[in-house]
Amino acid sequence: MPKLYSGPKIIKAFMRAGFYIASTKGSHVKLRGIRFGKLQTVIVPKHKEVAFGTFQSILKQGAMEFEEFKSFVH
Image (tube, rainbow, N blue to C red; front, side, top):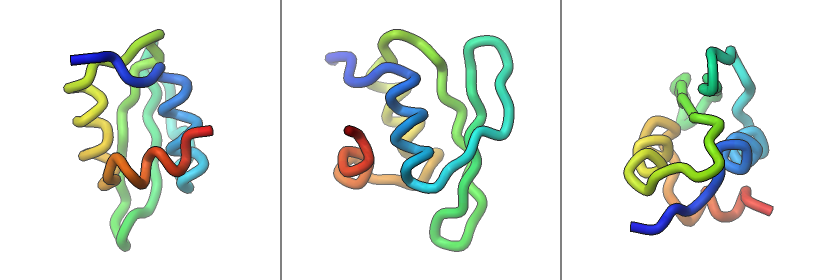
């Protein structure tokens, strides 16, 4: 599977969606945000390329569909 996005690009997209950085530990960033009335926590690695499976897991953690995510990427 192809690599899609970098960690910093994913973080910026989630921040545009209303998430905020809760903490950073090593090369991982914890983002939090309210989605559909629930607090969602997303852990994003700040890697140059994020593997496809990891990216899918990030979207699932954030309760976000890929099409919606694309709308926040610039």
